Image (cartoon, rainbow, N blue to C red; front, side):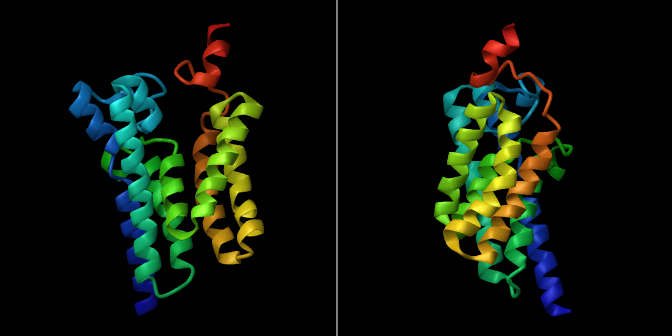
Length: 201
């Protein structure tokens, strides 16, 4: 029972860490309102940037990365099973996407996923950034690029790291990002750079 309790506790903690709504908190500090009231309706770094400016967006990006890192780092350091970091990685990203502290309306999870990868495999973090950029450029749509990234980042990490465990961590965060992004598959984003021209046509 002790290993099970340890694992469940760390996964739950990761979810709670991920649920800290930094976009909302920083938004209220900078512009005195909920950033979800405009733009995409998300509370991540991109929509915070659009609603509250570069300073607010950059700060949210950093904090979202840090919470992903912390949730995964604690699971690696304190977990008694190799599967704990896998589930904790998924949980911290899920917390960002569907935060219990913000009515289950969060962001897309990319920064938090990046932070979780950074905690276990820095090259995986770089691979994720490259995939996300490539996916958005090829598909000309941020959410669809995120779905592509989500499905590919785990296998790609497995190829580079030759580690099943690291591949599973990548797959865990990737599938959560993909699931969240599927909800925006058909959406036209007026507030994102790559989609601005399309949204005006």
